Amino acid sequence: MSLTIRKVAGALGAEISGADLSADLPGSVIAQIRAALVEHQVIFFRDQSLSPEDQVAFGRRFGPLNIHPYVRGMDGHPEVMEIIKEPADKTNFGGGWHSDTSFLERPAIGSILYALELPEWGGDTLFSSQVAAYEALSPGLKATLEGLSAVHSAGREYSAQGHSAQKRGSMSVVEAEGAVGEFIHPVVLVHPESGRKALYVNPAFTLRIEGWTKRESRPLLDFLFEHCRYEGYTCRFNWRPGSVAFWDNRQVWHFALNDYPGQRRYMRRVTVDPA
Image 1: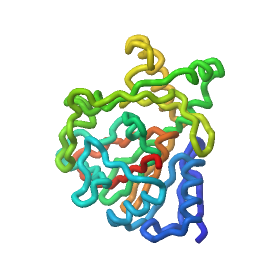
Image 2: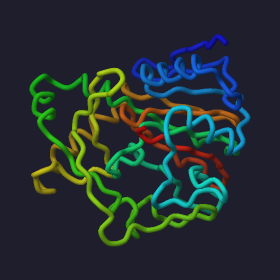
Image 3: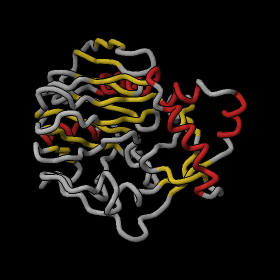
């Protein structure tokens, strides 16, 4: 089986053709897909036809699958998150820059999102390379950041006022109440497969620098959050039914645009945990 890999932007992103993700792909093809994911940080596939079982089977070729602590999975498939925005919903899920599950002790390594129903227009997803963001920093700031860690938590985003916890017509999201846990991750993450360095903070789940107060942390985090979403580090994916995006949360932020009022969007996601 021969895969065709075409870059879609300068900083990150590639579209792959020649693979049927519903098939029992040989190990050599899975290895090619994994290598493309690590190199390009987010990869895209078109014209796929995936049942929930197919998507679970494909995701498990890359590692164990996550069961989200706050979003109820499909009946019979707790690993499969249905991401749905109904025409009457005002807020969407994932509508802000973030890295999936950085609020966990062992964050996800990758997310696989599959499109079933899409609005007539709008609903694209943006991706931002945190490798490119790190590499653009000055040597002095790189040296400073490499000595720092940051505190991540779901408490703010999944609180009653948090964006992710807002009620939606077809999604069951549990509000984070009380002590949901705070976990510490390095501000500069060394990718375990490529050895490349990437910034690992995000506006949704990063609360403060470890050992600093929130007030002390805010100027640095605000600078990094602004820097990390610079347009030159991004790519934009226009979905079609049957499209798949697979991104590396260790290297990438993403943002689901909420620019399709009065229309329905239905996606399914599985999330790959570290082995």
